[in-house]
Structures are given as structure tokens and as C-alpha cells.
Image (cartoon, rainbow, N blue to C red):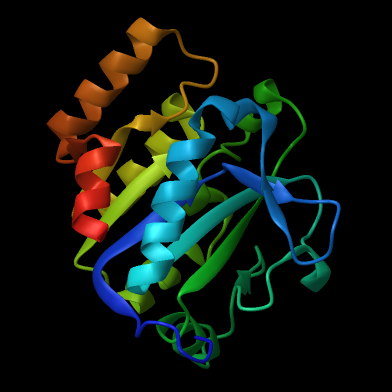
Length: 206
């Protein structure tokens, strides 16, 4: 938390699923081309969360380990190596507002599905520790690939007893059809998630 920034709040935490990747300049995460239509709302959600002090967890999916130069200087990077049981990761996550969790891409949709690389709770053994360390009252989830990456994030949070809101109009459908995307949202709602539009979430973050 930098000088003059808001204190960390844990009533609402945000999980940005795979909407960004490292940019060409050091310390810069940029929106992926595939979420171009969602960028205005993504920017609003992320800016509102940062302004109020809400924790933002971002899942980044690339085919290599992230480097310090790839990330904003205030980001806590959580790689895929199992953390030691000395509590260092837990303490760092509890004190961080900006957390980047890595998932390594297999390079193709077929391989990602075969190896469940799209599921952060399967692909990164530290994801569960991050959820517990953040200690949010509710998670607000948005981003890319509703049927795979975003869905598995929501389902993982629900499995861990978390309250979850899905921003239904900021959920990229990925390889799914619009009809299938609507079915997936309905399935997540039946599983226990709440569905809200971005304007309602922004009002809560304001």
C-alpha cells in the first residue's frame, strides 16, 4: 500500500480472471485483445476497487514464469511453486492489495482443457492460501473465458466456502456461444453465486 492510498478493505475483494497480460513496457499489465469489448468496464471496476482499497487478485495466464519487470511494483506475485509452510506467503497476501496469481498456459485450448490449466485452484497450489489470507467477506469475479477460466474460479471459491458475485456483463464468453454463456451463468447462480451487472457492482465499490 503506497503513501496516501486507501487502507485495505476486506468486505469486497475482486478477482480479475485472465483479462490482462504483461505489456511491452516494464511494470505494465495490459488488456488482452480478446477482452477488447469489455475494457471500459474492466478499467472502471479495477480503478474503483483500487480507489476504495479493495483487494484485487488477478490471474495471469502465459507460457512462462512472470518476471519482476513484468509486474507493477506494488504487486505480490504468486508463482506455481508450492509455498513453504513458514507463513511468509500468507503474511504477504494479508498485507497486499494487488496480488497476481500465475497459471501457466499449455499453449492451446485443447491442451489447457486436457490438463485443467484453466483452473487456478488446480494449476496453482497457492491459490487456496491466497483466498484464506485475504479473508474477504465476498468476492466479485469478472474477466475472460466464462465457460472455463472464470467458471472454475467461481466454483473454486464456492468450494472454499466463499460468497461470490459474478459480474455477468463483464464475463468474456471465450469459446462458448452466447446461448451457452447464458446457461453457464444460470448454472453458477444455482451453485450459489450471485449475478450482478457492472453498474450495480460499481455502486457498491463507490
